[in-house]
Length: 251
Image: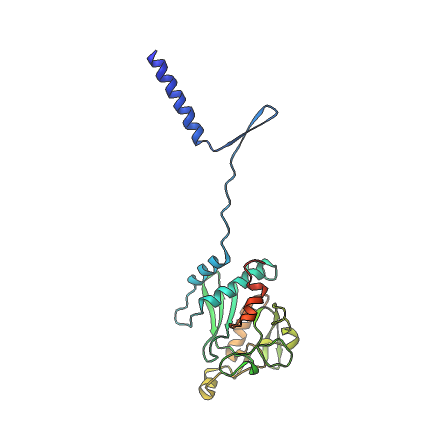
C-alpha cells in the first residue's frame, strides 16, 4: 500500500512540474484540442537618440576637431527622419555637417561615415557674405540676400560652372532653405577658403551663400557626397530648431 501511495505522489509531482514549465497555449475548437506556442515579444527598436549616442561614441575624432555631440544628435535625427520619409535611401550612411556656430577660422565641416564610425573629411567651410564676418549670425532663404540658409539638404548632381566643379543642393526645410536650387546655393571650391586667407585677413573668406570649401578639397568632397546624401547646416537659431519638421522625434 505504501509503494502505491509513493507512486501516486511521484506521478502528481511530475505532472505539475511539466505543467509549470510548459509555456504553450491550449485552445479548443469543435472538441479538437490545439496547442499553440506563445509568440515571442519583438525586441523594441532603438530610439533615434540612443542610436545617435551609440554612433557618436563610435566615431574616431583623433587628431581632428571634435564635432559637438548635441549638433551631431540633431543632424542624426534629421538624417534618420529623411530616411523614414523616403527622401534618402534606407542604406544611406554618409552624413555631412556644417556647424556654423563655430568660428569660420576652424574646420567646421565634417563628412562622416556613420556605419564605419569614421570622419572622411574635416574641412574649412565658408558662410555667406551677409551672414557675418568671422561668425555666422544671420540667415536667409531669399534670392540675392548673399546669406547662408540653415537646415537639411539632399545632395544632387554635379556640374562645371563659374566656380568650377560644383554640387547642387536640394533644400528640405520649407521656408528656411527650400529656395536653394533657385538661388544656386551649391557646394564649390574657392581660393578664399584657405589657411593663407585666414592668416592674411584674420578670418575666412565668404561666399554668396554657398557652403564653399577649399579648392583642393572640392572635387574629392563633392565626389564623395554627391547623389542623394544628407548635408546639415547648423546654427543655434531657436526659430529654426523649433520649427524644422526633420528635428521632430516622430515623422
